[in-house]
Each structure stands twice: as C-alpha cells, then as structure tokens.
Length: 221
Image 1 (cartoon, rainbow, N blue to C red):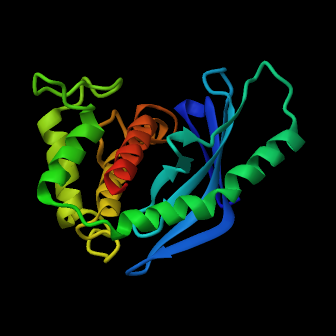
Image 2 (image 1 turned 90 degrees about the vertical axis):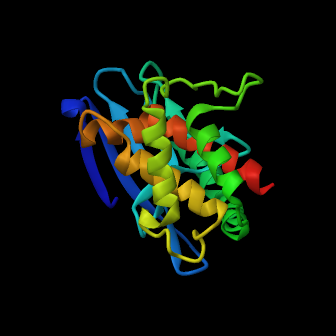
C-alpha cells in the first residue's frame, strides 16, 4: 500500500497499492502500475479493485482497459467477499499490463496532424459528430462549457501540460490522451478537489477518460 484516504466525509474509502509493474516510454516518460481499492459505507459504491496506471511526471491516472473493456473487479455489498476469487481475477487483470503498455507505446509513436487533434478533442469530450454537424454529448458532459474545455485540453497538449514536452507525448496520440487525463484529474471544473477526484476515479470523469482512451486507440489503429 502506498497511500489511502476517504471521500465524501468518509462515505467512500480508497487506497492505492503498487503492483511493481513499470514501463518507460521514449523520453523517460515513466508509467507505474497500481491497484486502486475502494469501497463505500453507504452502499453508493460496491467494493472495487481497479488496475490503474499512474504517469509519474503528472500523476495522471488511467484504468487499464483492453478492447474498451474495463478490468474493474466489483463485489456488491449484498454478496460475500471471496478473497481467493478476487485474487484470481486480479492475476488476470495484472497479467494484461504488458499488452496494455504495448498499446500505449504504439500511441507514443503515432504522430497526429492538427485536424486530427481538434477532431479527437471534440469527439472525446462530446461524442461523435452527427450528420447535422453537431456533436452528441455523452452523459456527464452536457453542462461542461464546451469552448473552455476544448481550449484547456488543447493548451495542455500543446505544451502547458506536465510532461507535454517529453518525446513520447510531443505531437503524438499519447500526448493527446495524456492531455485528456490531466484535464480530468487536475483541471476539470468541480465543486472542489475532492469532488474532482471522486469523479475522475468513480464517476463521469472516469467514463470520460475511458472514452478518450478508446478514441486514442482508434486513432492509432
């Protein structure tokens, strides 16, 4: 265990544990593997374990997901916690680390054009563009100030983001994804930092990051 804390006045409890997994993308862009443990005292969140990456230079987090499928392990409070079963599931999830980081390496080598940057940001934030030229807003983004959010992510990508100058991120799809995760984890408007963290790990922010990951993988395919 590395760190732990509570959210929502103690209603949610979380902890981060190192897995010992690490990958280094070009330019010394280091990514470490963690397990994010969480549970709630009010039934609002099942007991969960999420294999998660942490980009060291900016402390951005991203749940490990392959083929748009989350590796989150959930144990509802209404069921008995089977430690052995969870361990087996964790072994499978952690075993996918190499495959996931290989895909992140692919993202770091895929250069993007300016038109692709704008299209990616709009699609990740607001969904696909419809035939009428408008983007469909996914759940949780309807109230997000569109122009401000898009400008913020673009600024992070173009150099204001932590680690944006590293070789793996500069002008690449990995840089776009990192700008999006930094926006969600550190910049997205929220009532306070606690609410932003809760959203980034367990709510709409987490969903936004997974959508950004899926679109990044599509862009690099």
